[in-house]
Length: 113
Length: 113
Image (cartoon, rainbow over all chains, first blue to last red):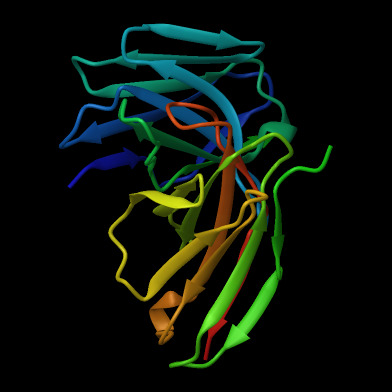
């Protein structure tokens, strides 16, 4: 079945460092990937979208890459801050008329002062 | 501008009962998707509604059904509740299908006793 895999272990980093989160997909080829942030008790919040024909996308301190050969996306947060602490979800979708996102389990990021 | 609103926020039911969850999409959005998120897991796609019709469906049994009203709001109905249905139920809205970012509500926490 279509699967998005993210590292289930929490990522602990120090403030000011770059956080890198990994998303791998198996058994399908998503046309695009979306990244979301989820805080405890809240719904996910959209951050970035990258299409299969794009190598890299940036938004402020965020950068996402999409490597269709490795079947992997990397999500980077530069100059991380304690306020960046949250769970980050990767989701893949196909180019059908209507969207059916497949989400990974998410990676929890903890940024220490 | 109100975002996606869901009601109720919490609900406790017993096995075998039926439940209805409600969602109002973000203003200007016409497409509503429902997701189930178990503790520690990513959201799992249940189905998507557009123009009052179910357009996409995930791997959920027929006990899960939905409806979209002319004002784009939506309901999720679950019959014959099982213990395993305990989860956070998220509603997401977007304008049209395709790869549009999903705007999520904060969900309904459903507990089955």
